[in-house]
Length: 115
Length: 113
Image (cartoon, rainbow over all chains, first blue to last red; front, side, top):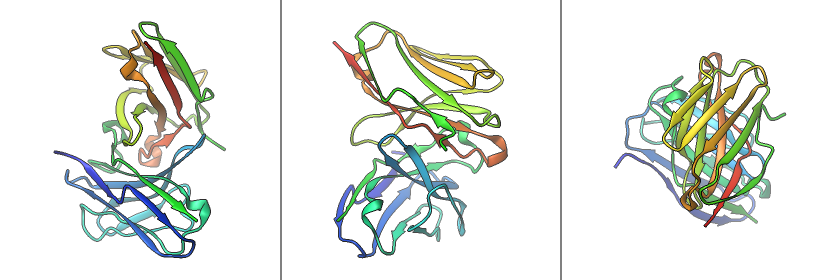
């Protein structure tokens, strides 16, 4: 089944404790992206990757890091999480960079709480 | 400032009636628009889209209308069904921005039996 898999689904952590949210897709998609969803603000892009070893900042990149060492994986790293990073996170992928009209495939989400 | 806005956070409709979800945008460079549907505990799923060269696109019960002069689009669901109850996100992309998606804040649709 074609899908984007995120782990974990739920995570509660403490301020300052480094964490990684994993994202993997099995569709050989070139483009991958991370979004956070907050009430009233919709989905805001954190980082994106056009292909292996090519990443760039989205609209809200502060406090986050990403890497794209292989095509299928695009982990999101919070080096020192803070309470304002409490949110619902989504990973998405698309066949090609510049092909939004094909639509994105989203993962099921990771609900992160930082206390 | 949000470039894509959905001004109604929620909408309640009776089963069988029409649901109309609205979306406004400010960036005149947007040339492709999409609607996503999201159920609780799931990721958003693509629903329907429209190119800026069209003013209407229809797919079964779902129709999207685009009014470029007003920078406004709407999603019509006819007839509405209880299974349509979800959060709907409007999204827009611009060819000169690599077609990255900018999302609105979402509208929660509740279809009552």
